[in-house]
Length: 201
Image 1 (cartoon, one colour):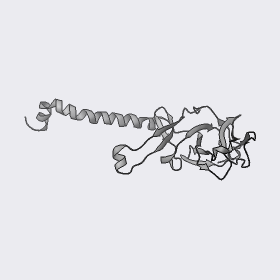
Image 2 (cartoon, helix red, strand yellow):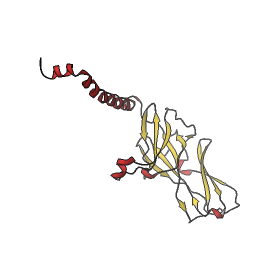
Image 3 (cartoon, helix red, strand yellow):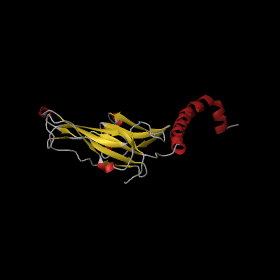
């Protein structure tokens, strides 16, 4: 008997050695795809804090976002004038229905000077929406931010730059990326809370 069948029998080891990597790749791709089919998409909106740019247009302050009694508040603390720059973070909301993120505007006091006490202001844009500070949402999703330092040798040659952090929500193997503006260069993204009530969008 001649032909492909005879070649396969006589070279079984070579055929197995050539097929095994393809089988492993296929199983890996299948394992990566299964969570997308079996795990439901996120059911809650997510609030994240993104490090802002430094500004000389206002007195130096530190801004922290926190959840208290189901509402998001911003605490503004004046810094010594020697600091020189104000680094004001931004607040973003990831909409689980549209899978997009938008910035939530926060009205911060602009007249604080060194020695003034901290000022806490509610985020009025989220009034009427209840926020949960627990890291895991009721549907099982969790916030995840992973630093990525670059594209590697090949990517660098072809200009494929990917600096910053890869930001996503994950649940049982399903990974849903959060498309923050200029996400390729985003640093300092941190969790604030899950929005439980629909409220006004």
